[in-house]
Image (cartoon, rainbow, N blue to C red; front, side, top):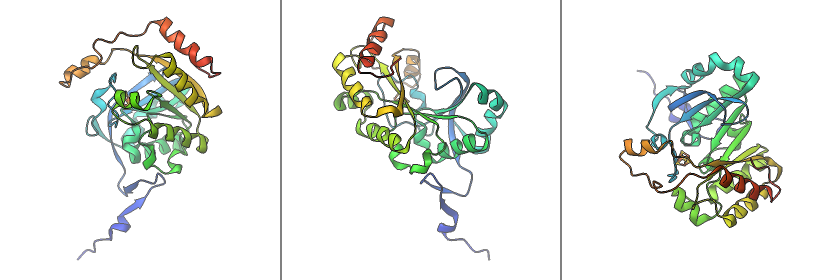
Length: 266
Ligand code: SF4
Protein backbone atom coordinates (compact mmCIF):
# COMPACT_ATOMS: atom_id res chain seq x y z
CA UNK A 1 0.00 0.00 0.00
CA UNK A 2 1.45 3.35 -0.95
CA UNK A 3 1.96 5.70 1.91
CA UNK A 4 0.24 9.07 1.73
CA UNK A 5 2.76 11.77 2.70
CA UNK A 6 1.78 14.20 5.42
CA UNK A 7 0.47 17.53 4.15
CA UNK A 8 3.56 19.30 5.50
CA UNK A 9 5.71 17.27 3.09
CA UNK A 10 3.62 18.29 0.11
CA UNK A 11 3.05 21.92 0.94
CA UNK A 12 6.04 24.17 1.31
CA UNK A 13 6.39 27.84 1.86
CA UNK A 14 7.87 29.57 -1.16
CA UNK A 15 10.12 32.62 -0.69
CA UNK A 16 7.02 34.65 -1.44
CA UNK A 17 5.63 33.81 1.98
CA UNK A 18 2.62 32.32 0.21
CA UNK A 19 1.91 28.61 0.70
CA UNK A 20 2.18 26.73 -2.55
CA UNK A 21 2.20 23.09 -3.56
CA UNK A 22 5.18 21.39 -5.15
CA UNK A 23 3.19 21.40 -8.37
CA UNK A 24 4.26 24.26 -10.65
CA UNK A 25 1.96 27.23 -10.00
CA UNK A 26 -0.95 27.71 -12.32
CA UNK A 27 -2.05 31.23 -13.13
CA UNK A 28 -4.85 32.85 -15.07
CA UNK A 29 -3.86 35.12 -17.90
CA UNK A 30 -6.17 37.65 -19.54
CA UNK A 31 -3.77 38.58 -22.36
CA UNK A 32 -0.27 39.71 -23.21
CA UNK A 33 1.00 42.76 -25.05
CA UNK A 34 4.36 42.48 -26.80
CA UNK A 35 5.34 46.10 -27.49
CA UNK A 36 3.87 48.32 -24.81
CA UNK A 37 5.35 51.81 -24.54
CA UNK A 38 3.47 53.16 -21.49
CA UNK A 39 3.90 50.43 -18.88
CA UNK A 40 7.36 51.14 -17.51
CA UNK A 41 10.72 52.16 -18.94
CA UNK A 42 11.36 51.44 -22.61
CA UNK A 43 9.46 48.81 -24.55
CA UNK A 44 7.67 46.27 -22.38
CA UNK A 45 6.20 42.81 -22.69
CA UNK A 46 3.11 42.96 -20.47
CA UNK A 47 1.32 40.07 -18.79
CA UNK A 48 -2.23 41.01 -17.87
CA UNK A 49 -3.20 38.67 -15.04
CA UNK A 50 -6.79 38.37 -13.84
CA UNK A 51 -8.27 39.31 -10.48
CA UNK A 52 -8.55 42.67 -8.74
CA UNK A 53 -9.88 43.73 -5.34
CA UNK A 54 -10.80 47.23 -6.54
CA UNK A 55 -13.85 48.21 -8.57
CA UNK A 56 -12.73 51.54 -10.00
CA UNK A 57 -15.57 53.52 -11.56
CA UNK A 58 -13.40 54.26 -14.60
CA UNK A 59 -11.85 50.80 -15.01
CA UNK A 60 -11.17 50.04 -18.65
CA UNK A 61 -10.49 46.36 -17.96
CA UNK A 62 -13.52 45.13 -15.98
CA UNK A 63 -13.13 41.84 -17.81
CA UNK A 64 -10.03 41.19 -15.66
CA UNK A 65 -11.82 41.62 -12.30
CA UNK A 66 -12.82 38.02 -11.72
CA UNK A 67 -10.03 35.76 -10.54
CA UNK A 68 -11.39 32.95 -12.72
CA UNK A 69 -11.48 35.06 -15.89
CA UNK A 70 -8.93 34.55 -18.64
CA UNK A 71 -7.18 31.31 -19.53
CA UNK A 72 -5.30 28.95 -17.30
CA UNK A 73 -1.55 28.96 -17.85
CA UNK A 74 1.39 27.16 -16.25
CA UNK A 75 4.55 28.92 -15.21
CA UNK A 76 6.50 27.23 -18.02
CA UNK A 77 3.88 28.30 -20.56
CA UNK A 78 4.00 31.89 -19.31
CA UNK A 79 7.79 31.94 -19.61
CA UNK A 80 7.58 30.38 -23.08
CA UNK A 81 5.37 33.29 -24.22
CA UNK A 82 8.18 35.77 -23.66
CA UNK A 83 11.18 33.71 -24.79
CA UNK A 84 11.13 34.88 -28.45
CA UNK A 85 11.45 38.49 -27.28
CA UNK A 86 14.02 38.17 -24.46
CA UNK A 87 17.08 39.41 -26.37
CA UNK A 88 15.19 42.41 -27.71
CA UNK A 89 13.59 43.25 -24.36
CA UNK A 90 16.94 43.15 -22.58
CA UNK A 91 18.17 45.87 -24.90
CA UNK A 92 15.12 48.13 -24.99
CA UNK A 93 13.03 47.63 -21.85
CA UNK A 94 11.72 44.62 -19.99
CA UNK A 95 8.59 42.97 -18.71
CA UNK A 96 5.66 44.31 -16.72
CA UNK A 97 3.23 42.29 -14.62
CA UNK A 98 -0.14 44.01 -14.81
CA UNK A 99 -3.83 43.16 -14.71
CA UNK A 100 -6.34 43.37 -13.10
CA UNK A 101 -3.90 43.44 -10.24
CA UNK A 102 -1.09 40.88 -10.41
CA UNK A 103 -0.98 40.66 -6.61
CA UNK A 104 -4.39 38.97 -6.75
CA UNK A 105 -2.35 35.96 -7.95
CA UNK A 106 0.50 36.44 -5.49
CA UNK A 107 2.04 32.97 -5.68
CA UNK A 108 1.93 32.73 -9.46
CA UNK A 109 3.03 36.32 -10.08
CA UNK A 110 5.89 35.98 -7.60
CA UNK A 111 7.13 32.74 -9.15
CA UNK A 112 6.85 34.26 -12.63
CA UNK A 113 8.75 37.39 -11.56
CA UNK A 114 11.57 35.22 -10.21
CA UNK A 115 11.84 33.23 -13.45
CA UNK A 116 11.80 36.40 -15.57
CA UNK A 117 14.33 38.24 -13.42
CA UNK A 118 16.65 35.50 -12.17
CA UNK A 119 16.56 33.07 -15.09
CA UNK A 120 16.06 35.36 -18.10
CA UNK A 121 17.78 38.45 -16.70
CA UNK A 122 14.90 40.79 -17.54
CA UNK A 123 14.00 44.09 -15.91
CA UNK A 124 10.72 43.35 -14.10
CA UNK A 125 8.12 46.00 -13.27
CA UNK A 126 5.01 45.41 -11.17
CA UNK A 127 1.92 47.47 -12.03
CA UNK A 128 -0.37 47.41 -9.00
CA UNK A 129 -2.74 49.31 -6.73
CA UNK A 130 -0.77 47.78 -3.88
CA UNK A 131 -3.65 46.90 -1.56
CA UNK A 132 -3.06 43.14 -1.80
CA UNK A 133 0.65 43.31 -1.04
CA UNK A 134 0.21 42.88 2.71
CA UNK A 135 -0.19 39.11 2.29
CA UNK A 136 3.26 38.74 0.71
CA UNK A 137 6.62 38.36 2.42
CA UNK A 138 9.38 40.91 1.90
CA UNK A 139 11.44 38.55 -0.27
CA UNK A 140 8.54 38.31 -2.72
CA UNK A 141 9.75 41.69 -3.97
CA UNK A 142 13.41 40.69 -4.49
CA UNK A 143 12.99 40.22 -8.27
CA UNK A 144 10.98 43.43 -8.70
CA UNK A 145 13.07 46.22 -10.23
CA UNK A 146 10.32 48.84 -10.28
CA UNK A 147 6.81 49.26 -8.91
CA UNK A 148 4.26 51.23 -10.91
CA UNK A 149 1.92 52.17 -8.08
CA UNK A 150 -1.54 53.50 -8.83
CA UNK A 151 -2.79 55.95 -6.22
CA UNK A 152 -6.38 56.50 -7.22
CA UNK A 153 -7.25 59.28 -4.81
CA UNK A 154 -5.53 60.98 -1.86
CA UNK A 155 -8.71 61.40 0.18
CA UNK A 156 -9.81 58.23 2.03
CA UNK A 157 -13.54 58.76 1.54
CA UNK A 158 -13.28 59.65 -2.12
CA UNK A 159 -10.88 56.76 -2.65
CA UNK A 160 -13.49 54.39 -1.28
CA UNK A 161 -16.16 55.99 -3.41
CA UNK A 162 -13.98 55.67 -6.51
CA UNK A 163 -12.60 52.14 -5.95
CA UNK A 164 -14.90 50.52 -3.39
CA UNK A 165 -11.88 49.91 -1.13
CA UNK A 166 -9.87 51.83 1.52
CA UNK A 167 -6.84 53.96 0.71
CA UNK A 168 -4.65 52.96 3.66
CA UNK A 169 -3.39 49.58 2.34
CA UNK A 170 -2.11 51.32 -0.80
CA UNK A 171 -0.26 53.92 1.29
CA UNK A 172 1.13 51.20 3.56
CA UNK A 173 2.35 49.38 0.47
CA UNK A 174 4.10 52.51 -0.77
CA UNK A 175 5.85 52.99 2.58
CA UNK A 176 6.89 49.36 2.53
CA UNK A 177 8.45 49.77 -0.91
CA UNK A 178 10.46 52.67 0.51
CA UNK A 179 11.65 50.43 3.35
CA UNK A 180 12.55 47.64 0.92
CA UNK A 181 14.36 50.01 -1.43
CA UNK A 182 12.14 49.27 -4.43
CA UNK A 183 11.88 52.33 -6.71
CA UNK A 184 8.42 53.52 -7.64
CA UNK A 185 6.66 55.36 -10.39
CA UNK A 186 3.37 56.71 -9.05
CA UNK A 187 0.44 56.80 -11.46
CA UNK A 188 -2.67 58.91 -10.97
CA UNK A 189 -5.64 58.86 -13.33
CA UNK A 190 -7.03 62.34 -13.85
CA UNK A 191 -10.82 62.25 -13.96
CA UNK A 192 -12.63 65.61 -14.30
CA UNK A 193 -14.83 66.20 -11.27
CA UNK A 194 -13.46 63.19 -9.40
CA UNK A 195 -9.70 63.38 -9.04
CA UNK A 196 -8.67 66.74 -10.46
CA UNK A 197 -9.58 69.21 -7.69
CA UNK A 198 -6.66 71.43 -6.75
CA UNK A 199 -6.81 70.56 -3.05
CA UNK A 200 -6.98 66.84 -3.85
CA UNK A 201 -3.88 67.15 -6.03
CA UNK A 202 -2.13 69.06 -3.24
CA UNK A 203 -3.02 66.30 -0.80
CA UNK A 204 -1.78 63.69 -3.26
CA UNK A 205 1.47 65.63 -3.63
CA UNK A 206 1.93 65.72 0.14
CA UNK A 207 1.41 61.97 0.42
CA UNK A 208 3.88 61.30 -2.40
CA UNK A 209 6.45 63.75 -1.04
CA UNK A 210 6.50 61.78 2.23
CA UNK A 211 7.86 58.81 0.26
CA UNK A 212 11.04 60.68 -0.64
CA UNK A 213 13.45 59.76 -3.44
CA UNK A 214 12.03 56.24 -3.83
CA UNK A 215 9.48 57.92 -6.10
CA UNK A 216 11.39 58.41 -9.33
CA UNK A 217 8.51 59.68 -11.40
CA UNK A 218 4.82 60.56 -11.31
CA UNK A 219 2.61 60.04 -14.34
CA UNK A 220 -0.69 61.88 -14.61
CA UNK A 221 -2.78 59.65 -16.84
CA UNK A 222 -5.78 61.19 -18.57
CA UNK A 223 -9.00 59.30 -17.96
CA UNK A 224 -10.23 57.69 -21.18
CA UNK A 225 -13.31 55.81 -22.32
CA UNK A 226 -11.72 53.11 -24.49
CA UNK A 227 -12.98 50.29 -22.28
CA UNK A 228 -16.58 51.35 -21.79
CA UNK A 229 -17.88 48.79 -24.28
CA UNK A 230 -16.55 46.04 -22.00
CA UNK A 231 -18.96 47.14 -19.25
CA UNK A 232 -21.88 46.67 -21.65
CA UNK A 233 -20.54 43.29 -22.77
CA UNK A 234 -20.47 42.22 -19.11
CA UNK A 235 -24.05 43.46 -18.63
CA UNK A 236 -22.93 46.34 -16.41
CA UNK A 237 -23.85 49.99 -16.57
CA UNK A 238 -20.83 52.22 -17.05
CA UNK A 239 -20.96 54.63 -14.06
CA UNK A 240 -19.09 57.53 -15.66
CA UNK A 241 -21.05 57.76 -18.90
CA UNK A 242 -21.60 61.48 -18.30
CA UNK A 243 -17.98 62.24 -17.39
CA UNK A 244 -15.86 64.01 -19.99
CA UNK A 245 -12.26 63.11 -20.72
CA UNK A 246 -9.69 65.71 -19.62
CA UNK A 247 -8.19 68.10 -22.14
CA UNK A 248 -4.41 68.33 -22.62
CA UNK A 249 -4.50 71.60 -20.70
CA UNK A 250 -6.31 69.87 -17.78
CA UNK A 251 -3.49 67.34 -17.66
CA UNK A 252 -0.81 70.03 -17.96
CA UNK A 253 -2.41 71.95 -15.08
CA UNK A 254 -2.40 68.85 -12.86
CA UNK A 255 1.22 68.14 -13.74
CA UNK A 256 2.15 71.74 -12.91
CA UNK A 257 0.30 71.49 -9.60
CA UNK A 258 2.33 68.41 -8.61
CA UNK A 259 5.58 69.93 -9.88
CA UNK A 260 4.94 72.99 -7.70
CA UNK A 261 5.49 70.65 -4.76
CA UNK A 262 8.91 69.76 -6.18
CA UNK A 263 7.75 66.39 -7.51
CA UNK A 264 8.93 64.71 -10.75
CA UNK A 265 5.52 64.77 -12.44
CA UNK A 266 4.91 64.18 -16.15
S1 SF4 B 1 -7.21 48.73 -9.93
FE1 SF4 B 1 -7.05 48.72 -12.17
S2 SF4 B 1 -7.93 46.73 -12.82
FE2 SF4 B 1 -8.54 47.08 -10.68
S3 SF4 B 1 -10.58 48.04 -10.86
FE3 SF4 B 1 -9.06 49.70 -10.71
S4 SF4 B 1 -8.56 50.26 -12.81
FE4 SF4 B 1 -9.58 48.24 -12.86
